[in-house]
Image 1: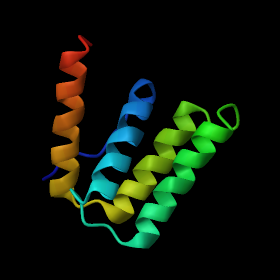
Image 2: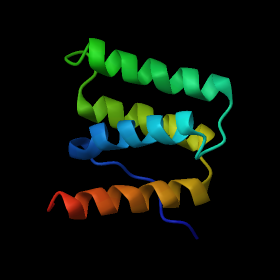
Image 3: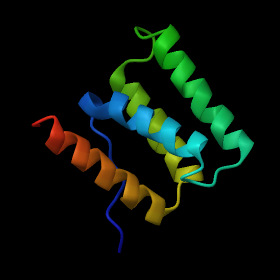
Length: 90
């Protein structure tokens, strides 16, 4: 059984950047509606940072990912986050 998806609030910016990169580079096959939804989350997070705190961003990103990202793709993305975490010494 796959591990449950999780994002910590202190890594929400890393996850958002990674999801944007993966969906727009073609690493993950996502329909246009998915990309537009992710852009909406990113837009709100950057334009209204006090209205969308990290904990809320986590909820939005996990909800989006459950709908659009396969478990295999999520595992690959989680591995990338772990590599970035190790590089940054966390």
